[in-house]
Image 1 (cartoon, rainbow, N blue to C red):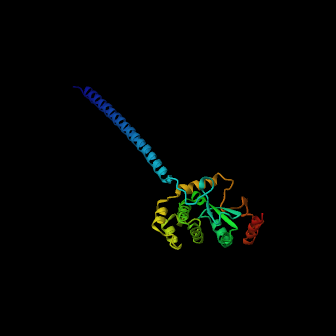
Image 2 (image 1 turned 30 degrees about the vertical axis):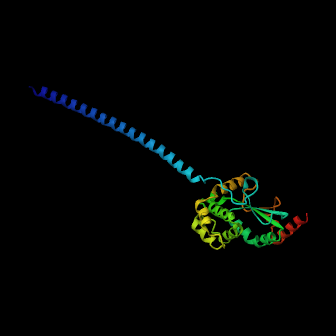
Image 3 (image 1 turned 120 degrees about the horizontal axis):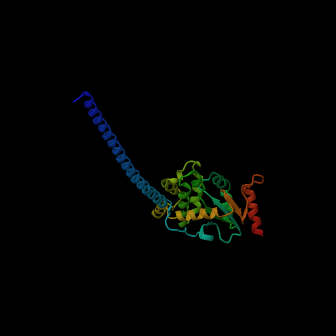
Length: 259
């Protein structure tokens, strides 16, 4: 065989070998693409399941259980907690959040005056509990504290526990009331409140749905800030040009009694 024919046969073999290598490479790439598509599909399905599970978890977390009204709750949808003698001629309506610094400022300034007027039968107070701070800053302190206050209402201890929460209010950004152990610890300072029934009510969030309903009612109202304070339906707090004082409040209530 001539050198030229030998070289031609080698070149043909080499070309055939190169062609086979290219075909094998294409086949490998095709298998890799198919495998990748399968993986992506599986991951896509897994991701879809993950979204469903996460969504289900979120729904479960947001679910607050059955609607249980505190004992004695009144008004439309029973979202109002009354304090004082029902026959009192003047009515103070207060929309509050237990994490709201402005609410604590109002309570600390007017608490003694309000209680004195309530004791004389001149004023009754209607409390509407909301959860603005939880919604704005995150956390559960507004909700948990409001539920605990509603639990205290069940045994006639709302006013004392309400006042204690505001006296011990943490900084607005500190979600200390989100810890139910802290709420129970404070309850120990109210005689007769820290009972097994109260602890169960706090720990299980018995009134969580009611608190959320109270907040929803606030959102549908004409008021959008806390504290909102009304005397016989008229806003009396928050006017910097004519600030409310304990003496002015006493005069307003006396005027309502005369009328």
